[in-house]
Length: 458
Ligand SMILES: [Zn+2]
Ligand SMILES: [Zn+2]
Image (cartoon, rainbow, N blue to C red):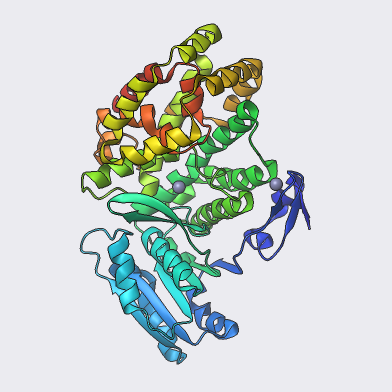
């Protein structure tokens, strides 16, 4: 099957499944999910689904909250339909963390005969079950309980091992079931987190576009359009999200799942993760190293998206001195930067420095080549920023009106951490984003300082 921009406008989420798309970008796009059910009372379809697929022994995983939200009803349905199962429910006295301990617990509890893992929950439960599914080679279904993050359709498992977040390969769920009656009752904080994670696509899509303009990277406008469509749908009904309306919550969850599908289509997280995610990862790393429970993924991304938008706003309103940028690149003090990375990353510095060495990202040649490219494509860059990026004040206003946290201090992130994250987050991933572009242009320190200030003046 071919896929075009026109088609994307008329496609529903189901239309992307069980097909191979031959795309103008030169790649074949496909995702491994069999079914996605998003409707009112969707949970009642679980017994039929299990029977149709022929599963005989189910391992149901939830935590106490998600058990109350959906697990209890699912269990009743399993019993009524005489489907064999065993279950494990995490106590979650404190926030459940997807770490080696929680994964080990599931390995202890899972029955040898299990032929399907049924995850009941959102971010953490899904991350754990995706990894368990991959390691045991047993398929999994996810019954979503909140529209809180974009990982439902993702195939990577971020896990916290030895207090560091590591991304492992994982399975995609065979079936995603989202009962609108359940997800619209999720805590408002989780709904807003999902909305923030989706809004993060504004800045991440611009990062992707600039990666292709400046750095000649692979880019697919069809995948981009898939993400943009769902983003626009949600932006046009923010009131509905605030009021937990069925259609709005459904669009939000669809948008989040489609972001995951977009990642499968591109073969990496490019369409769903840019500088806003890198800054958020940096905050999370520092929280973990200090033994603090990190906030919800989307709650952090909400704030870092405002930061990234601000950086873009600053970029296109600044007078760029390209000759000075080249001079800066030539005189760049590598040793001094490495010392800064050691200080900013603390215990996690070693891995980051290994990546820097491997990518040779501090060498002046690459930087000078990119500065040339930025200069030659400056008009296209400004046009892209104007097209993709909202004014950070407006974005912050919209989010604040919804009741979302918009300032780092509201989630315990201090000014030093904000500054360090903008300065050093680009070294976490070899990916061209606004952070790399301002580094290339010699504007990083100045912009990190103004953005830190901007985020704290509420
Ligand atoms: Zn494509
Ligand atoms: Zn995300």
